[in-house]
View 1: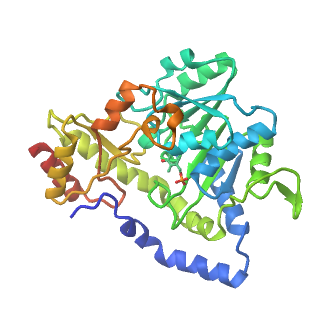
View 2 (view 1 turned 60 degrees about the vertical axis):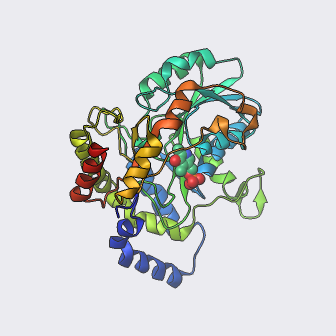
View 3 (view 1 turned 180 degrees about the vertical axis):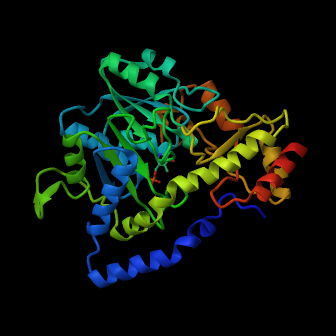
Length: 366
Ligand SMILES: *Cc1c(COP(=O)(O)O)cnc(C)c1O
C-alpha cells in the first residue's frame, strides 16, 4: 500500500530530538510563550527573510489575526471587501469572514490553480481593501502581477502561505515575504508540520507585527492589562520546540518532494491525465501533486485497487459549501470544473523513487 502521506515516517527521524525538547521544557517548567516560541519566531522570520514572525495557534487564526489587526490599526473597516480565489481551501475565506470583512471570490487560472491576476481589476469596488493570494498546492501565485494590481489600486496584499513554506520567486524571495503580511499553518501534514496545531504570521510592518502580537494574547502587552479585545491564539511552546527541530531540514525535505514531482513530470504519459503547470524552479514546493482527469472517480478507484491512496483537495468548492450560503447561488465554471476533476496523488519527502515508479506505472496503465 502506498499511503497518501506517511506522516509517521516523516517524523520518525526527529523522535529523539523531540523527546529531548519535551524533557527540557519539563525541566524548565515554562509552558506558554517561552524561549522556544521566541526562538522559532526568530528562526522562521530569518528563514522567510521578514523582519517579524509572530507565532499563533493555527493557520486560520494567522489569517484572521492579520485582518483583525488591520481593523484595529484603522487600515480596514468591518464590511470592507477582500478579493480571494474561489478554489481555495475554505480557511482562506473563513479568515476573512472572522474579521467581519467580505470575501469577494474570483476565478483562478485553470492551469496553475492560482489567482488569475487578469480577473482582479473587474472585482474592485470602492469597498475593496485587500487581495488574498493563496499559494495553492505549494506553488507561488503570480505575485508580481498581483502586487502590481494592488499598487495601482492602493490595496493590501495578504498571502495565504499555509501550503508554501520555502517556495521562492526567481529573485530568491520567499513565500511570506512577498506581500504586506502572510499566514502560515504548521498543521501536521504541511511541508513544515508539527505534532499538533500551530501557525504564524510574517510581516515587515512593525505596527502590524505589534498588533498581531497583542491580539493573539488577549490584547495585552502588560499581563492582565488588556488594551484590545483580543483572543487566545498563542503558538504552543512544545509545538514551537518541535518546529525548531524540523525547520533546519525544511529545504532538504522540499528538495526531496521535488525529486518525486520531477519523476512524475518525466514519466506520466497517459493522455487522459493532465499534469499541473510547472516550468522548473523553486517557486513550487509540491505540498500536493494535483493531476486532473475527466474520469476522476474511476481513476481514484483504479489507483486504490492497486494499493495507491489518493485524496481530493478539495471535493467541494467553497461557494458550494453549506456553511457559506451567501455564495451558494454564484457560478464559477473554472472553479467548479477543477473541483470535479482534480486528484492529489502521493508525494512526500519520504516517498521512494520505487514507490513513485509504481504510481507512474499504474497511472499510465489507466
Ligand atoms: C491548512 C490551510 C489553512 C489553515 O491552516 P490550519 O492550521 O489548519 O488552521 C489555511 N489555508 C490553506 C490554503 C491551508 O492549506
